[in-house]
Length: 254
Image (cartoon, rainbow, N blue to C red; front, side):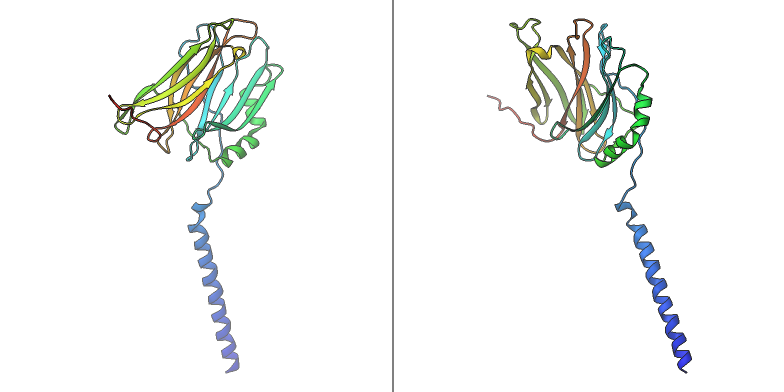
């Protein structure tokens, strides 16, 4: 009798352990989506932000992707002004605040280095940072127009500049970008002063890229900056963000 009792107790304990292990295994599986695996990334493609350089040097623009909270990652290949060098910068901007939250630069002394070699050598660093900020890489980017429609609302992006006639090259002193909507009103998304020795000769709008996760856009514009020793001048892209539904103000009609 005592032997049968011990056997029954052993079988009961075995069943309890088995059920417990099975439950924990299922629970871990069901919660796996709460802990996503880290993403991997590949070298992004260049996107043309200006149709005609007019013989000026261009800094290349390679967008990587967006986070679900308005962060935008991209690569810049700055123009080489007769240095024979290769330049590279990867950056993450928070387009809610328009703040640069992380960047890393490479300045090669010769053109032996390429985007492929820089990317490969530093891939672990790049992937760690892109994952840290939740950047999801997109396969294709298309620069959309400055006048566009979204969710049955009409929008127009406008850029305003003012030159200083007292400066040697009469270059730009102020720059402002507004977003206007027939339905919502308008707002200023960037507005700043430039210094004389920033040598920004002109500026223009390129277009916008919309986030796939929210009603937010990255507005791409460019500045033409006087060359180090004069022409050829350099064209650099700039980025500012805008939500498509908040902070608009309607002007009262009199």
